[in-house]
Length: 92
Image (cartoon, rainbow, N blue to C red; front, side, top):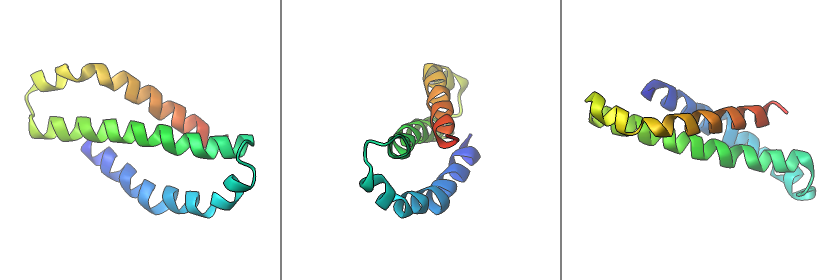
């Protein structure tokens, strides 16, 4: 999971953030259009999912005992759903 979070961080830094910056003009020219709303919703949802995933990876990495893992298991489904929602928004 740590590797996935790190690879995702690299993709965010080198692909997604520059793409968002290049698209800011289109977003501000029609802020209530569907493309603009998706372009804003995707990074917000994706950031929340990435931050929770990074937190879980960091916590589990520091405490490798399975008890710590199971304590935070309830966060895994919401993170998965957020990731799927962000991915679905990116494909539209």
